[in-house]
Image (cartoon, rainbow, N blue to C red; front, side, top):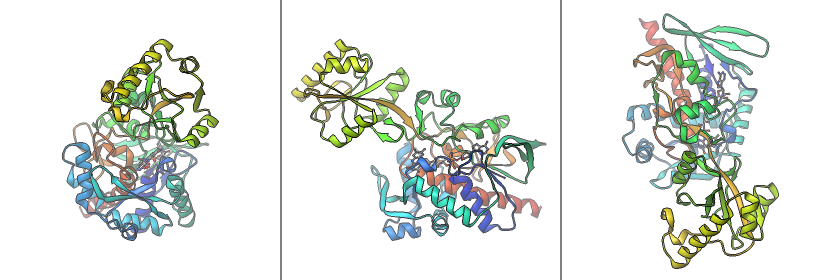
Length: 440
Ligand SMILES: Cc1cc2nc3c(=O)[nH]c(=O)nc-3n(C[C@H](O)[C@H](O)[C@H](O)COP(=O)(O)OP(=O)(O)OC[C@H]3O[C@@H](n4cnc5c(N)ncnc54)[C@H](O)[C@@H]3O)c2cc1C
């Protein structure tokens, strides 16, 4: 049984179909679409020497994958875990190409600009939406037993072993029994209660994840009291005007009380201040802002508002007028003097407000995935609260993200590639355990 048809469940399905054709498996998806969070994503994958990476002239080594993780986390990675997941990355990325996914050799970015120029993320044509449409076509051409509108509501457990799942579809509820169950149900970006519990800083943030990311894997495994690993952080935290539009550029942000609250060039500090204090945040710009096309597009879509004076802006945006005028005066003065501004904003990065018209854009904290995860062992078996592998139960993808890196999203392509490769890898682990069991 494979639960979830995001990229992780789909890659697990093809691993069974293509490498273990003797195995009968069923893939269940609760929504009426496949892909999970993938259609919304950038659609980029990392690998080392895949055919695509070779064609792009961007080859890397396992050490690069590990080093980006370690620099990002600030401590050692679980090298064996990372190696298990990524050692067959090239073959799995090649498989995606064989299935019909086209990658865009003009859309290649370093996985981490700051600390590695070898490891590269290559996006699918049409980004995540294009990626998903290639997968849809692949499934039509090369199908497997995929049941849509089929939600797993419970695991069936006998003598501590998972032996199947309860399924609910539009007409009925029924049981499916299986030698092994793989949960590839994604993260919990859309569960307000779980955000509050595991990532309080993001409890009021906006999720950009797929509708199915409601933390079902965490609920389904609760009975085993697994350890939740990975610190309280989201994947891809950002400040944006809407889930599909980046915010305009500018370094003057105030809350409704008219005061600045963090260094505008430090996204993490901004997100923390907004999350901890439940602030409404407004990016302010003036007539010197040069990207007039972006401004006009923002005004057309209603995301940006234009005012002739700062007083009108304060009134229109319901920002405390007196304090705003004081904040602007102090900010402009410090910038003119070349002094560092409050919260450590360098004068060179300041964007003073002194030329009408004035613009305001409400900005929100958003995220695209979750790091806290159920703990698995190196063979993707769920570990119960005492650290014992639960027989018959495996997990992959974003549901297990915190096993790969535990505090912050390391860089482009890690999310999708980890979900994809951990799904394929988990299928192999299931087969190894079956082989071991039948040899006994
Ligand atoms: C806006 C956005 C941008 C992103 N950008 C990037 C990027 O640039 N690079 C990168 O590497 N990653 C990126 N990511 C992250 C990456 O896309 C995800 O981490 C990854 O796709 C997760 O895959 P998954 O298969 O593990 O989970 P999901 O995609 O969440 O799939 C899980 C599936 O399981 C189904 N399901 C859940 N519960 C049940 C149940 N009880 N029964 C049956 N089915 C169930 C869900 O409906 C869903 O289809 C981005 C994500 C988003 C949203």
